[in-house]
Length: 74
Image (cartoon, rainbow, N blue to C red; front, top):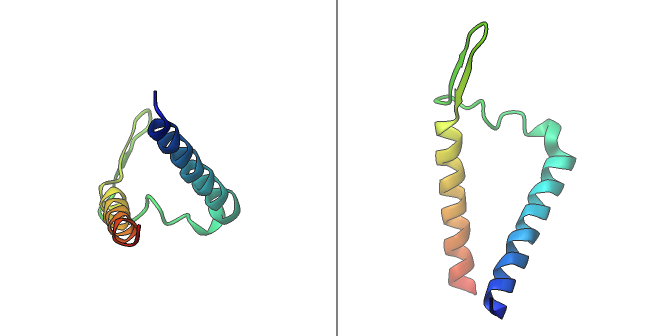
């Protein structure tokens, strides 16, 4: 391993920490995540199927925009 790998691991840890803080303090206000129109939910007696396709598309678009802005300035 080299120093670049260590930097990426620390960055991933910082991102996870930030996400954890957001969920901890704003968890009650983020109840709409996973319940967007287009998310597939099938619930039966002994079976649950959940496929959050719209939520994942939205997350992908937001992350793409953030990464492009980050790359442009840094």
